[in-house]
Image (cartoon, rainbow, N blue to C red; front, side, top):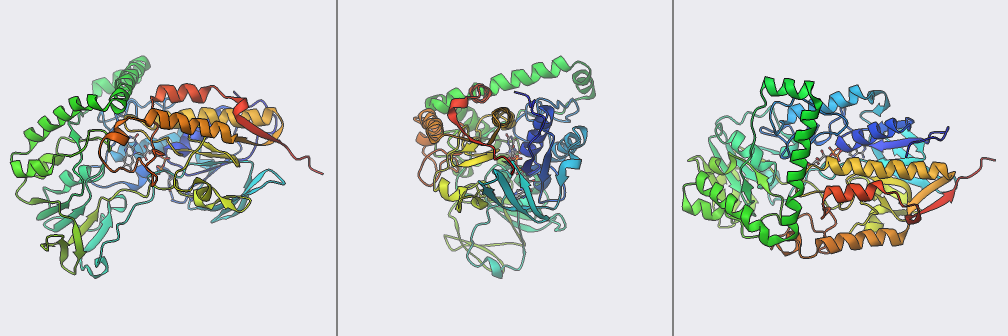
Length: 492
Ligand SMILES: Cc1cc2nc3c(=O)[nH]c(=O)nc-3n(C[C@H](O)[C@H](O)[C@H](O)COP(=O)(O)OP(=O)(O)OC[C@H]3O[C@@H](n4cnc5c(N)ncnc54)[C@H](O)[C@@H]3O)c2cc1C
């Protein structure tokens, strides 16, 4: 649906990462150009601006981990590094003329729905702004999770989170404790291990690690990809289809044994010490937590200057970290690879209708229609909302599908001269039931692990458990019957 209404509604987008920029481009292309983008930081890029730790890179091939409307033939590697992805997003903002729409250094702190006027009132760091539609693109992985380590305040050394890397602290020759073994840690651990005096890794859960089939992209290939766009489209399609097949494994956990076999062989190839290998062997089904890829991580832990501690942290002292066996691990720095606050999409606790926040409505298990709109909360859309995350492929596929739905919803409201649109509670419930059905028996619930994919109630409210192809088809078919419209108020 394209906007054919002479009056374009005012639309606010909060956040300028992949989701916010992608939404803005698609809305502008459909004729909705009355857009303001609020960004609390001083630049676009989201996680790719913030996560500049050594070794940071994507773990989905870049020909796919990029917008379909902005192909890039100049990736330096099949899995691009953080600096390239950050530069790509800055270029998208320039090429699609988004910068004039962005208010940098301006956080949105609260949003209240004025039902009498069908308007969202936004409290921002730059004052109050009123808009008809609100798109929340604040990122599911944008707020670092800082563990509450007993005694951390007495530590004499440096402490920082991987998403806020302290580049002015020189790690050369230092004793470093790393906490966590998630997607970020497995990238920065091998990058820092060769330069530190000693690295102690505190591991709660061993991740499954598969080889990373990365390679530099030479100038000939880059030129070809740039001059024959069809080539890049074909490569993107190939990667897309290959990754979609993985859903079969997530939904049929026994198939994951094939991947486990590969991962165990990879571990044997990389780690000679059998005791260490035992520590690094996961005790749950592959895919239950995020599958990680690296050619260096496991090997870097089998070096003389590295130790893996699995007993947990008892406390931090002035000189280092004491594990649960009472052993002190002296440290000059503690690096937290402890991931992000994932229980809530930032801002949802400050989006209010009739005095009730969206966070309160979500309770312990958030639900949204197509992971995007919420019954009782008109004219607001969550990018990376409940069940938008993915375990197998690029989340940008999901963002582009979400925006198709958002454009249709806004267009439908405008074409019916409605002031407000929201999903019906029944339609939202049906979507929730679909998610539950697709999740049943999957590796996420039967794989024998605790993961952030499952919420406090044990329900999958984070991942889309189907193919992105299926989600895209559902997002393209706008169902007017699934929505309630409120007539626009006539100005008196
Ligand atoms: C290190 C790392 C690697 C990743 N690699 C991959 C990968 O390989 N493949 C994949 O599919 N996914 C990956 N992801 C997941 C990643 O989160 C998404 O791919 C995507 O980049 C998220 O984009 P986003 O726009 O939703 O959120 P973000 O990139 O987090 O952007 C949110 C933006 O909103 C701003 N913001 C937040 N709150 C406010 C507020 N109140 N007011 C104003 N502005 C606000 C933030 O400053 C930020 O700029 C990775 C994540 C991380 C952290």
